[in-house]
Image 1 (tube, one colour):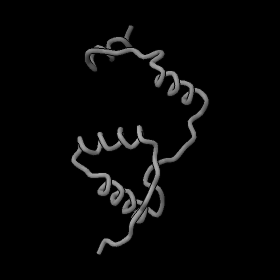
Image 2 (cartoon, helix red, strand yellow; image 1 turned 135 degrees about the horizontal axis):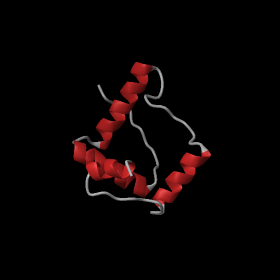
Image 3 (cartoon, helix red, strand yellow; image 1 turned 180 degrees about the vertical axis):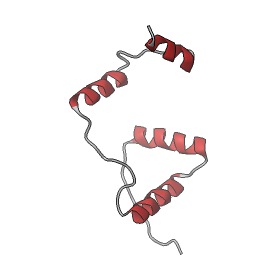
Length: 85
């Protein structure tokens, strides 16, 4: 029987983005939390690596968030071809 309740505060934009993705895959936020908790109990820990990005990764992610240094391609093949140049 499901009787325990979890209350959490999260940034509205993070919630909106995550719930949009969950909706696309057909999972409710409650189901996602259940899956997450179940995986924690099955694995005996968080079910993915939790790491602090190194300086280069952090800088690259921040630049990407600002839209800097991004190259867009019309196809995966076009992207791979650009690597061969």
